[in-house]
Amino acid sequence: MHIPKEQKMYCTKCGTHTSHKLKQFKPGKARTMAWGTRQNLRKHKKGYGGKAEFTATVKKQTKKPTFIAECLVCGRKCYKVIPKRMKKTELVSAT
Image: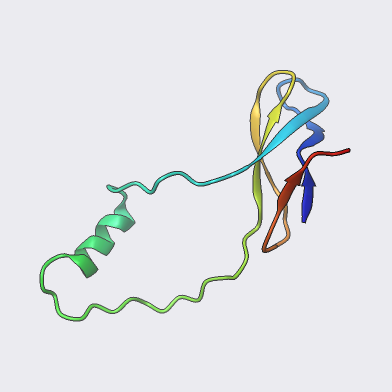
């Protein structure tokens, strides 16, 4: 799906509708000391331990695209999530 790089959205800081620049959201690096990471290490990676089975989880094929919208007037950033699942999104300049 083609999504325009610049959109007019409501800015909470400015209090009006202003132009926002969109950028694709990418999650950061996972925390090594997070609880889930430590449990996974303890259960599946450490020692001899025999056969530890993973629980079978079926992952969805698509995700809801998330963008970071930055106000061009004040610079405030906020998330914009499109509430539809899609395989591919592309930011295009509006001409």
